[in-house]
Image (cartoon, rainbow, N blue to C red; front, side, top):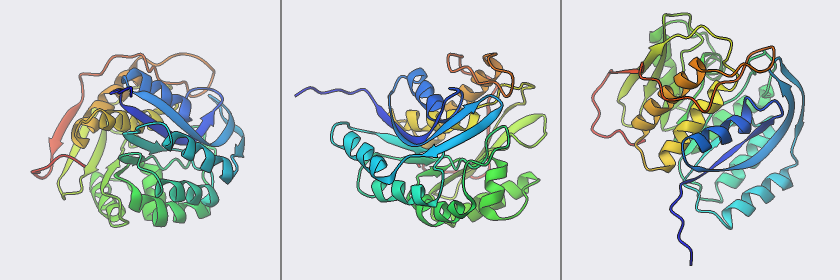
Length: 283
């Protein structure tokens, strides 16, 4: 029997025909982080750097078939979700995740595209909160997504810490709230771990239009690092450094929100500051 030690990771998400976000960004991240990437397509989008022009959900039975196909052949060590379209498809993904062992689950609660288009039907938010988040090892909302989940504005860093606690009470083990939408000199992310400890990860804000697919890239990198056996804290720090490098060295294609550069080198400008001590950093 062949023994393959290559870490294997799967993204469960929507396809971006423009290649900058969605599972295309996930697979590029997996490749850059030296893990073998696979995909389960939940929705197709006609999309470019301007936004999403059309979308087409995948039938539930074909989602089932993709899960069954991968589970029958691969030793998947981590997985992540991205765009899940609507409540029906969230439930289909949840049903399948309960039947397989794909390792740690990172939920990127994709709700709105960079161009402003809605990517998640409103009724699906409740389904994600009630059904998907309790299965997740970590969730990675940006500020607009976190506001939708908790139901109120998040303006200050104290709001971010309170929101993380509220989200954790939904059943998700670890919460990572990304602060890139705040107009501060630094892009500051707040992390609340399962053991109650917390910390901030900060990096200089980069003035650029190349931010298409940043959330996908960040969550995919965390999944990749977990598949390699890294602790959650180290995976988050690596993902932050990878994303900052990818943004600062963005690729200039298209005429709207350009994509990041998945060939880029890690940024050395990431800073970590603990809020509470922790005896365990493994999520």
